Image 1 (cartoon, rainbow, N blue to C red):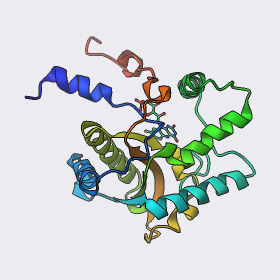
Image 2 (tube, rainbow, N blue to C red):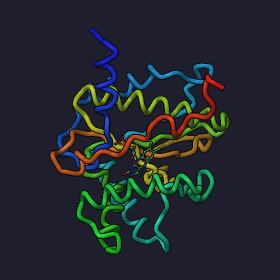
Image 3 (cartoon, helix red, strand yellow):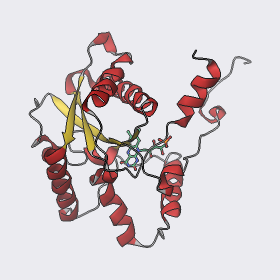
Image 4 (tube, helix red, strand yellow):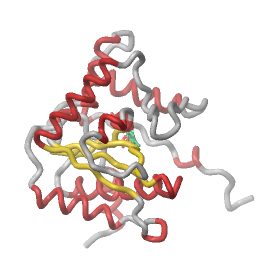
Length: 230
Ligand SMILES: Cc1cc2nc3c(=O)[nH]c(=O)nc-3n(C[C@H](O)[C@H](O)[C@H](O)COP(=O)(O)O)c2cc1C
């Protein structure tokens, strides 16, 4: 039976996976995971998003095109750079420090010196190789529902990630996979009403140490304003 304790333990056990085995996900398992995402709530039950699935040749072709696109870029993309939305999101003060702690944790675990730009670039490239995962998902939100479309997509993604975790799969939501919408849209027949938001690598986690690194959890008090006492 599901108890509060085992739910908390399970939810806390979901962590981003950044190194995958090449093992394919059985079609019925992937279908179940994608369906379980629909347990999430949605604005007026509209489900204002679409999901692109890249596997096999499509996956390899898309990965190659994205790595080439990255290599041809005059500047390295920021995680929020996406011409389908605001072109570049500069990190606001107060939030950039949190982001930098994630970068440091990942680079330290991988033994990458922060001044080693070649090694940092290689890690960036790994994002576009889907960290070795056999399947990549791309998420598009309907432009017409503005913020509610991206919110609903986020709820869907979290439900999907928990379902994947329950089935022994790992996931990594990836803002970087939203950087080049025109390249991604070449592989998916999708109306321009939908904007590419981000992507996700999904597959069976390897035993690489990066998968054991744990991003910090902020004390909830840092995020709460006001209190019932005043
Ligand atoms: C919308 C979104 C975009 C993300 N983009 C990336 C990405 O491009 N590359 C990456 O390695 N991790 C990415 N992440 C993973 C976050 O770094 C991770 O969720 C965060 O550090 C908390 O760690 P956890 O997922 O292991 O709990 C992204 C997460 C979200 C929700």
